[in-house]
Length: 153
Image 1: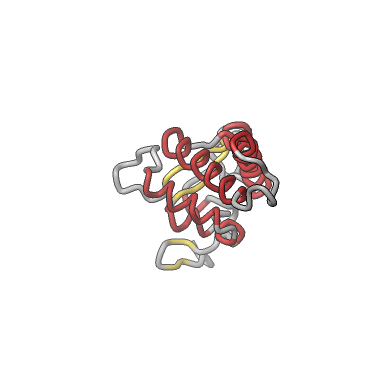
Image 2 (image 1 turned 90 degrees about the horizontal axis):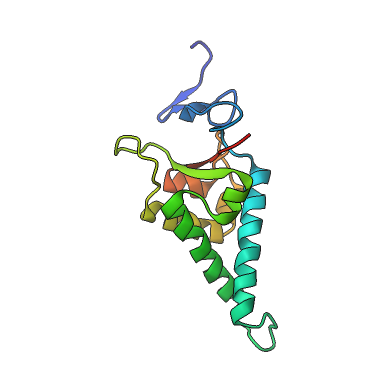
């Protein structure tokens, strides 16, 4: 197409997030927006905080490692369901799902344990989800070759 910028990985510009990935512009299957993704992460974090608080006091004078405990619980509560079902509790509540991108296995819908562990670890670092590409994917999704899509309008 005239005027289209093409890079080594295909188009570098698009009319909407997810166009380069073959996703629809809106509705089911479109790239999830940052706000919805942040809300899902917040739900998962509060669930992790609550579970950690059941087992240990959140008082820093009594338990200085409580923050690490919350992080560990959140990591497990995010990684396991995303690997098994493609979505965490917060994602399911908000109608989101993680899908693989560029899957060489023939279009399977499973993300895979390795991708999920890398993706979740990079989310825990905080910065990677904040830096996004033209498709709305953060560094964590690019590194894991995944995309978060909407499962309902």
